Length: 287
Image 1: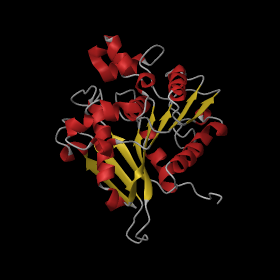
Image 2 (image 1 turned 120 degrees about the vertical axis):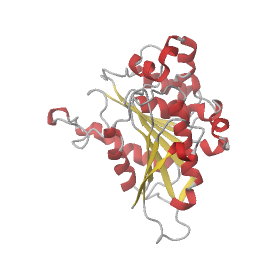
Image 3 (image 1 turned 180 degrees about the vertical axis):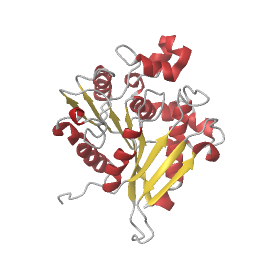
Image 4 (image 1 turned 90 degrees about the vertical axis):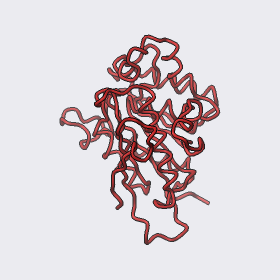
């Protein structure tokens, strides 16, 4: 297993704030020359205040075990020193995409099979980026790279704060925008449902209808936008449990009484299968 941590701002001097890409990849030196792997960039949540551990390595482990080269983005956020605001986190995600693509030969990655998965505030980061900001908001120019290196081939959005219009998580909006949170035009511009368009990849979403931190309406508005633009998507709305479930298993729940019903944990397998299918690596295809 290849396991190392890459400093983003050392590789991309245009990014002022420290951030890291944790690499978890299959060793490839004994692979057949033609073998290639899909890759997933994992964006944990934390309300744009910090990067949550429970949505980092446990998610990586599931994708890694499915033969996916995995990268965890440890971005700086509002509780970092110094405090950072938009677009710092988005630039760090853009740098992660460029890093993965530019090192595709080293990790034997298929450059056309690179996805992103985000949780809660990380769902907004992964969602707003993948929906179109990667192409529209000047990240490539800011980093001095080709915009096509930033393209996501698939996106999975897990109980994401996808919309900044009501109802939403005001704490998340405050952490990302600071005083700009009072600018309704900026909030609308960064809302997923208003970004979806021709540059949005196939998307997977899941949420619980009883989420008491991030309203399920965030995902419902996202689905409506994807449907309106005829973007392929798969979605799961579960009827119980709250927020921050991660894999929804004993591994990611701190207390025995908080472990969700097993059917909610099925999202991880569904998402992994979906990702492999949409990027062309589905196993056991009938021919």
